[in-house]
Length: 435
View: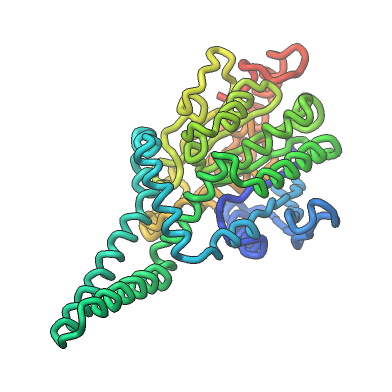
């Protein structure tokens, strides 16, 4: 039952911040995690994988964690996309704005935006936010252009020159507003994200597909060669649909994946799969979801939060996409997360309206002991499936007295033996799964 070696493969979302920033955040949050539970933690420096097709596209570090009666080693792979994302964000402002508006209105007239509204109105509002901002900035820019035109006419300037001057002022004012307010509005970033997901869903991002294929091969290689007891493929934010693609393609490369060797678990956090899956062109993506929904050799845990406007809540990634697998459905297990329960009230009230900060709480340290704890999932001694199936017992391991901890281990051991006995060949079945 006690995990002594775990391999985590982390799939970041659409975020231009790269390895250095994520590693610093991980190291800082790991220290907070250790202090909260009184654990000893050490983390190594990130190292790039061996030269070859994987060079500069992944890096990894090792974590050692020890508590009362247990010690766990975690290999942590960080899959990198920041070079592709930074390339998107380097596009000219005018190109991003025009392309983003065309895609947005295409979503409106195709009915896709309506599906977003029905699935989760908060996310639909969020994805519409940059367009409201752009409209507001365009109105202010038009007002500035009108004032210039009015002033020139008052001075008796010719009408053609007035029009040219007004147009120049409008373009300059709008460009300046968009550029210099970006750190507060995220207008260009969110539009670039929308462009990327639309292109990805339509198969127009071959460089992303090529990297997903390489990461799928990496997952297969790790599963075939690792002595870890479980492999957790973590997808945060847009990493949710990227992670599901990596796992589905890995299963195509090796249909025996998860049936031998380490247990394979897909953990999606703050997912937004509909931004790909709701497009009619994304039939292949939906087929992969169907495969994961009925695959008995892997587990899929999907954590959602109502407070996070950047994920879909409540949302079933299978039935929500119109995928009907009937009684064959095994995945995912949906876990609601209340951030109010894991953060102290004075801190929660400070950042509850900072949407990006809320979104990243999924992968940050708790301030209160709780069944949901990202770092306990990564570094703790309990397999993820049992952690979700027995949340009270799992929490008692680090938040109870010695007798309570001993009883918690017995509960977890009994639960695992009962689950394994439900499958004569050791393959996970519906009776053996979480929930």
